[in-house]
Image 1: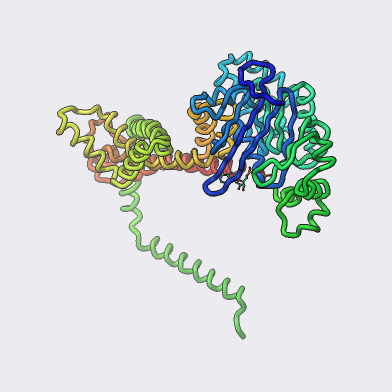
Image 2: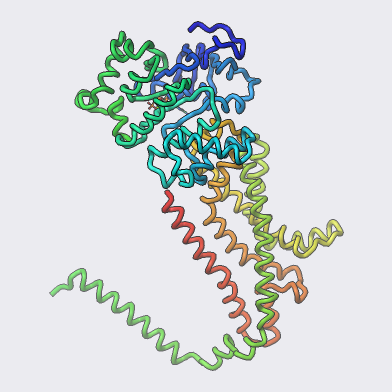
Length: 276
Length: 261
Ligand SMILES: Nc1ncnc2c1ncn2[C@@H]1O[C@H](COP(=O)(O)OP(=O)(O)OP(=O)(O)O)[C@@H](O)[C@H]1O
Ligand SMILES: [Mg+2]
């Protein structure tokens, strides 16, 4: 996974390459030197306690946040280069948000076609053909006329995934895609993501779903305090963590009941499930 | 025996009704009904007002209002976007404009455009253009602030989702943020339309020809002719024919927005 080569198009180029990434909000340093990479077709899950900088890391990859220092390269294009056309880069990166962020004034189908038409310049017929194919892929063909407010959370999130897929991205970023969902709706969304992984999509997923990480991820990255504490295969990181911080975190996530007893003050992984 | 709280409340309410009944009775006895009717509702005068009060006056009121509203809305949107611009001079210009035109009477703008401009520049503006500019310039200042608040009320996640799909800032504004902002500001904008309907009466200043009369002017002219308050009452009722349904619309839109949340 050493990819110092930067020739665009070369098969060896990683999908995501992050070097010395730092991000500060005012005095608060949220990312304190991150180095990691995601190979083409790889599924990487990022885990870690609340406030450890997982979302910020994801948002630095498609420049929703501007890094304070360091380099981020996506499929051979250095996005931190000031001359790069970021709108062009973002087309190739799908992003799925915790809060879905569907466009409430547009139907499901229009949610999927608007960027295809306005950004990629596809005509209506082609955009709708691609949109319908992607709605079918997430199992929502019958909902194309529905508005977001008429859909359940799980359905909204699947439409959001289909919206990102309609741009035919090279990689997908997921920021806690199931954290805002009622427990019984989580499965449908994870099933869609599992299917994507099987189809070979490159995915960087922030999640608290340990069973998903264990089953689907090629690699798990554990973050705490703005640094990567450890990374490796799911068996290594989730199964046999090397660091005390990782063990503490996993104990909380895997057994929330025990954590609530042990940590009355809230916060942490157990607290976050309650706070929505 | 002391009175309970509930009994006291009943007594107070009874007294209030009593006072009201006495006032109505006294008014009914004292008032000169014949003279009141002749002043406010002289059937002969009413007949003389129609149909011109509708075909000319009401139509012109609506026309002037829509001219001012249309121009004000377009300018207000531009000002709102300038107000939110990342380029400071744009913000300064927008703020100065908004503060200036919100702070001066609309009447003054009518005088400036109707008399000042023709005198100073020796060009006479078309009547409709003068009305459009006068009402629009002031209306835009109010609408700009309303629209700005609406744009800021659209959740940040909407812009982020749009940008993450590769939309430019401008494209995200046009396709995603502004359509949602307009839903939010529809009720206050309709209120602005009601205010403009009433302000359109200020065109009387410009010295109108008969065919340009709107409701207020028409009413005043007929008042002089018939020496009766009837035209004023009818003109007032016709304003209500415009503004009451709009007010109803505002309430419906507000209820809809409240439900959508
Ligand atoms: N725009 C911002 N301005 C200021 N501080 C911010 C901003 N965004 C994030 N932060 C701070 O950065 C820190 C890391 O935030 P981040 O959202 O990356 O954490 P996270 O690991 O995703 O946590 P969670 O699991 O709760 O989503 C937090 O302390 C947060 O308050
Ligand atoms: Mg987060």
